[in-house]
Length: 322
Image 1 (spheres, rainbow, N blue to C red):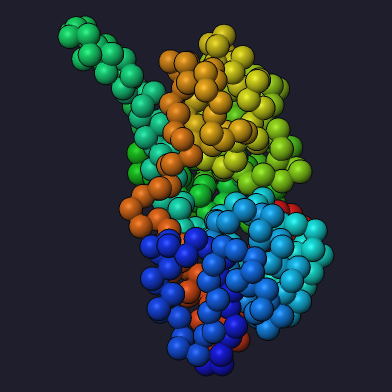
Image 2 (image 1 turned 180 degrees about the vertical axis):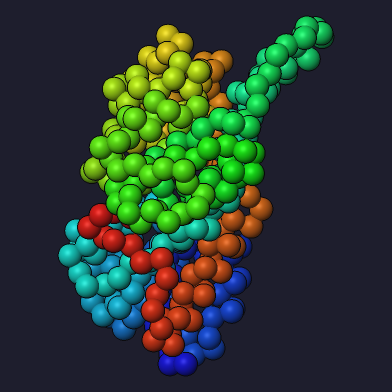
């Protein structure tokens, strides 16, 4: 295995950096979060991994590293990894796609159960010391519609199937899922509103790109069933939040389970905090024990493929934005 000069953009105290010991002994490492650490080594660098440091810093190191052959993001979303110099360059970008999908899918099921089993009402009664019988619903026989069906969507579909649910999917290129046995029907973007109108639970898994910004707007939300629940585990700005707030406030849909928001952290006093028909996660649905370790292990596997001149996994389409 040939030696590789690697730049690791990370907080040097991060616990997951211990896993770098699993890299081949021939690897020449430079680790840090200050530009002066990298300046003497940037010209010789062949590979770079950004461990969730800000885009501005990533870009600054990148432009000082003219001989890079590969860059990797420990995040799944690449909106904080794409900048003009990288997009225009021949340097491939890979990401952590798939690392967090299972946990996000579990959050989706938790959100569905939260509303169908009336968990909030049960907790209120318990806190008030009241015993009042209530009717609850079940997931069996319901329909889950998944927006931007991909790796996260596949995990959501697996769990939905386990509960006896029907699964509909939307993606830009529906032919890619034509043979997916998890899915009952696949829609292109021209069928998005139809899919949402048939779904009891709409799950948004979209990355943020110019095409997905505001993809779920007032018209799409209006197409949902009055008993429908929307869940977002993609990126917050994919949903028109003012339109969603209006629908929730006026009872046009049953509720929302949200892990991501257009502005994070949510400003103090934001209405999402106050609505009874919102289940709110502080962008933590994938923060399971060892979640950063999982991402680092994926990078190390990919690094070994790179050092052995094997095809890289999780290549990002830099122009499409995912």
